[in-house]
Amino acid sequence: MHTIFLEHCTRPGARAQVQAVWNKHVRPAVATNPGHLAYIYAFGVDEDRICAFQVYKSAEEAQAFLRSDAYEAYELEVTPLLDGPPQVEVLQAKWVKGLS
Image (cartoon, rainbow, N blue to C red):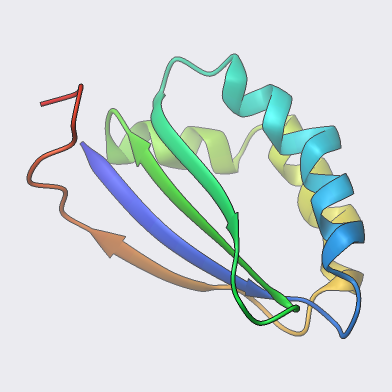
């Protein structure tokens, strides 16, 4: 498994717009992607914070998703709404309920 924790900070007040772009491009792509074993999209307590926790079958599956048309369209549309690039941390999942 390949696990990623991602944190986005949106421009002030743009979190709902970012979610709409995510719903348009990423949500359907994740739902149909067999390389995603788990995906959690969550809002932080801070009104301009969005977090995503992703579990892929492999690092190769993660890279393939980042090169997908859906993800590229998402990045293009969402970048002006973000307050800089996301913070990304690659983690080593040791146990995932239902997957281990």
